[in-house]
Image (cartoon, rainbow, N blue to C red; front, side, top):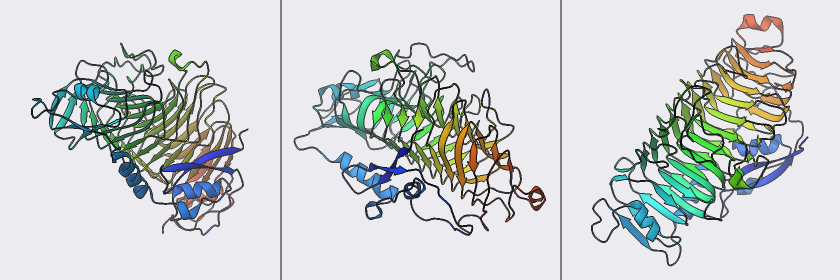
Length: 479
């Protein structure tokens, strides 16, 4: 069993996060512990048994600012190119023409207008529009709206895409492969994935590139990172696509990315935000899955996704034997009214790694029951389900409402479900496969211990199956 895990904390360095390794230890919480004002990353550090380097911690808001300030600064000698629909004043008439003409680290400034094209980027540059409500990349009848192609441009890094509406693509609005230090910020992505032939589990996406090994049922969603690391998806509006934001490992490992501040809604066929490990594509040169790990999904709104298909607010998935989606952090998101649980962690076969994922500080409300081979008996906040043991799961400081089952553990292994706020009534924590589940120091809607038979008469949320509760909170967190 893996004994160390790597977690992300924000630092005021040239990059916006770094890794600190922590050993697993027992983490006991006092019964009367109130809301902890530290960042979730510092709390995770304590849970893992180490201390986060407090002098270097900064807020996520400031960290994001550092990313943008660093990313948007000109490199010495870089030039500005311009694009407008008429090609007037020495500007290019198409975005692709300007990108092709640009030198590495140039900035391409795009004026308001509608550009009917698909764009491929294979060099470091900034592609900037000032207002997504007036600057549209119209991709009707074409494949991907903006493709950052690191497969054919080895070592591609330092690309910024900001300020566009990208719509009506057959596949993704934005696709990034095998690249690093990419920033996607302030865009609107809508009505993409048009090639999808939806038929439930038999859906297909004719014409999607062969290196996308697991996207037949959603055409890659609106934003797709495959083989991407140390990149940021920030403050985008993602709506009315098949799915929202996808991180996968089809072409290389995807790790150490930040997904933050996005509004992801009404993507009716799949999840709002997905971290999914797939079998490797031939272009990867690997015969084993490459992994989706150490990514942070924080401060997003994921609402009303997957209500026709099967979509969670945030999904962490392993598909085939050997696939791995582990050591990710899902924190401080609003996850409401999605078709299946607010957070779904799914393993479907033996020999998968879904260990050491952390779900912390989220608001989870009014989501649906889980389905297919990971079913729950009613509306569910978080479902951790698998055949292989899933170990090191931390579910902490989340607030639940309008869920019949707040937390379901339906896999062998272990989980810590602590310092959450359950509304009272229904099931707070259900353990369906005999995992080791510690549910100390939660608010159960009352001050009684939920494992005591009479607690249900006091309006408490209850437990189901073997759940350890040694202490309870005397009030909801923050009260």
